Image 1 (cartoon, rainbow, N blue to C red):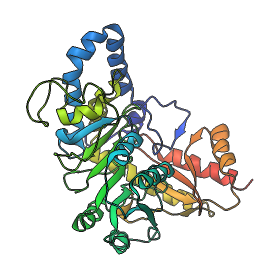
Image 2: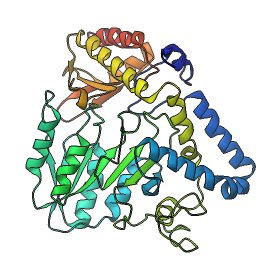
Image 3: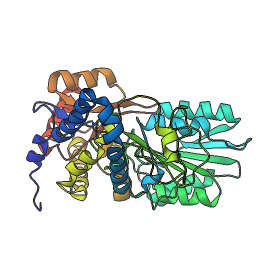
Length: 397
């Protein structure tokens, strides 16, 4: 497909035609074929659970693992499926052992629940939390790396950061940050909630210890798809949250050989949590294949094209200041703007929906109020113009 009909691409989504959905950064809507596929899997599970669980799941699960690992540039024997990023990060934070005294280093733009997660871990381990301020909007990747390196000391045990900041869409230079941390013996944990399908992710190039990602955002997989990627295949530092059948799997052989359950001994101890519906995991190949019909690189280019259009249109509103850098290495399909100080955030979000049927993110940070616009391939320039017009009306009431 050389010339893509993006209106046709929009018609492939389950989105109602009257909704302007500019919030993939929170949740991605489902393509029709992905919804149909996961529904057919659940129907099979409902009709004949023994056949589905015992005979079908092992092949389907291993295929999903291979396809996702290939998509993110990794090894299937290092990929653990989880429900979401929160579960994946908590798995690391709740069992990883770090030497005390020392500190955990995080940026000042991390998701609030991740702050809570690492504060609890720091208390368990007897460590301190050290937060550093990311450089301002005009930064280039080297400035961000230099700012982080200045804060790395012999006391730094772990560095946690987001690959893409949820609040602004800023893409951090993950490879360089991990390289610097590795030189200093610092464990790296990356919140990659926005990574898959948002950037051209290649985990083979990012020498991190742990990378947690989501499938329900830019990949447009069903909710319930997350993963934790081990930077080292022989990962032995973590303990599973649940003790279930995967804790001591039957049989002999290597911990990293494919087993009869669609996993490996090492991975299954983390994934097996008793009886649960894993159909969302099994639908990942369908989500990958759907965007492949348009071309993953073309989709990312379309996202960036629309994001640039958002920057132009909303800047013309006068009162909106972009806080996401224009630098190509630091941005992609998500851009945030600072809102006027007098803005009522709940009133603005309610007004956008109730009067204009527009979904977008309004984010309250301690230092500023933001509106974050997420553009995927199924959006169009006319929707961006509708948002700009709606904001002009609502912000001047």
